[in-house]
Length: 334
Image (cartoon, rainbow, N blue to C red; front, side):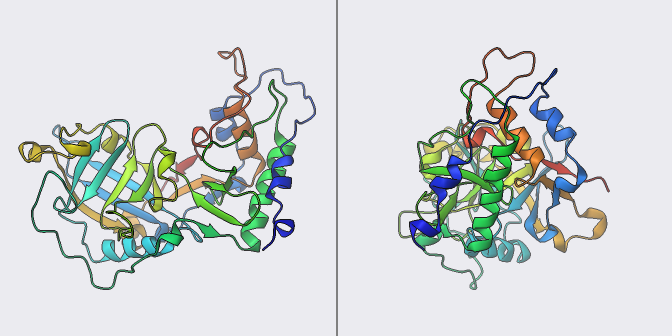
């Protein structure tokens, strides 16, 4: 596809200042989300949810983490492997092995690529896909491009004036960024190539040195400032949508890269089970929705995140890092 057929630069230009509007009491981002119409919330399929049950906390508190898996066209080889591993109950009995402050929490087999443990690694299922490095990014088809165009057009029509006036700033890690089907992505501006980005709570695949790309047996989540330098260098496969506090609050490891040392083995948090939500009984199956990134409510929310006009703030920032616009996700009552 040529540049003339994929005018991302033109799409970015859509983000021009909106006409001034009188707002007596500009809503906060949270108020915009709370008032979003039901039609602008999108159900997350149970097949796209992982439920990870950790051992109870020392005080007896139950700990459950829910992960939303990445949709097509991104990272589907690894996502398929993760479903296979979960359905084989491979993660059961593994552990959280690494907690590096302001960086990541990593879980899986304690003996895999662990500088603090030289034991024999757990055997993975034989039918896992070997995913090539070129799948760290994806070429977008026409329907995907249309969704991104809708996002830009809706954002441009919903932005309120500020000083500076535009939400869209140059991304230091990419030529452009946007949201696609509820996910933050970065992209080129002259061809349809995009990739997911390392924001807080995103889940990625641990790997060794290139050309190894990891299988999905070792996973991590970001618990600090967005490490965007990892974009397109490691596969991103999802995000934590509930229970992040059970990972981010774990004691930090003192070994290399934040791994727990042999003397700290008791700090490892055991993983009781990991299940695909669609495999759970109805009574145990969680349900979640995300705010559609193609709708007016999200456009207003994103603008409010970039330009805080609620009473506490004095100067609207006039822009926001894409990772400072987390896509709202909510649990649906049973």
